[in-house]
Image (cartoon, rainbow, N blue to C red; front, side, top):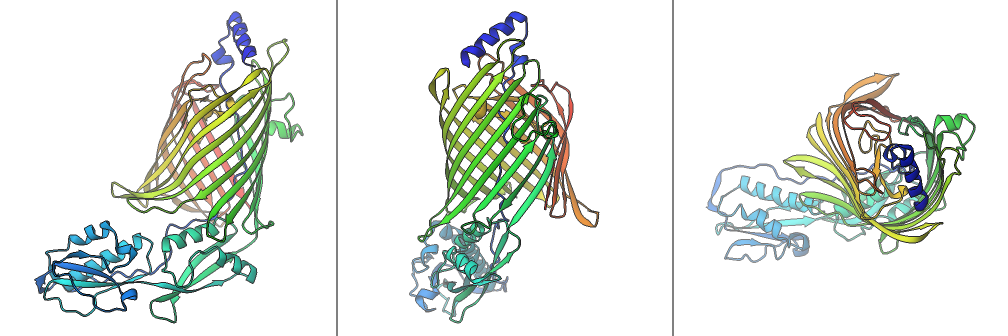
Length: 579
């Protein structure tokens, strides 16, 4: 195919046709079947134990030292005080053995002791424990002699008495309890418990929440898992104009997600995507020699928790894509994609930014069969097989940026593969990829969202592995193959206003407007020019009840790319209806 492509470029040059225009680089449009995920929580509904402000009247002595004591281990007794003062956490248990806590409390030293100061210290200790996975904690100041300026602070981290399940049958209750790693007699680690709850809530057809109640014994709590469940499937239909001029701009899609399978919480997903031209002709598997696009995709999700508490997710996927691109030189392609991913969740990290990370490995096999038609000449045939492995790290991100709350995600990966063509020796390739998204909230009615997507390879990648720039996920205003490349990057910034609330057909609805600016660059391969694309515009997202979600964007382009001219005004939209 590479020799044939070179010969074709020579032939094009002889006819005076620009290869950059006649044969623009095009990635393969993919529409995978994505598993549906349930709502994830950022915190548990655990009680706060912050102290009241208290009286600011000084006791007549300055604070010289603090002793943090685990009262459950020490039985609530007073411990010997260190006459030298300072911050002593030796008797405070594992959570207290932290320089960050000592540094936080050191700011109180030398200040006049008062009920108000003691309340501030209690609040700081409580907040520290909550930030380190111990939300169920009681911080008290026992009766003691303080004339020397040294104060003992008792900390009691509650332990689990038992776990109950409400709203589930016996089999489901046993499954849910088995997936909660917190056992009776252990301190309530709310960060770890939150991981358990979110793991269970990956199932979109069941919602688990927690409730804490006092246990029969002192300093114990009873954990109740409140379960709400309904039907175990969901279907959807939708439409968009996310295609291309060559295969048709319009797309219609339909699919389903279902989970009543062999093991609990496994999920089967399917999606069909097609161009109306192809569906109208009665073809549902391959387009034949008529302009159009068809895709069938399926995935199977298997979450696994071992007896030791180790967790992993397996996702198997398969897709068949058929397309016929009309134009000066039409092309027909059939693509089969098989993949398997193994993901391992990691512990949540706390700090200025909280991460909910996982590492993953993915195996993928692609079989690409195409024909390129050049006037009356025999078609140029290509049969390419790609085998590749991806090693990556991804995470949700939340934290403070310039004292503003923010949330987002990141995904970084390295891809190693082998390309096997019928008329050429197998070749190895590699590339790195990255995706970053972050939304910063200025107030409940405004936010700024920033995103960057890119990949880099020193090799010339097959269209299946290239990064496509266009449509709503990269540079709006351009079609899906506006530009693509082995090395490419796209970024965007979006200002989102507050939601506008109204009623449609008796259903609550919202519309959240936004304005945006997007930019993209794709390195030219095989003698083709680099591509620079930019756009600005406005749009918004509509949500009607729990069933309808739609987005619309109006964009003005600044550069020629593919079939999109500079200074064009384009409208992109997508609507999904779930039932």
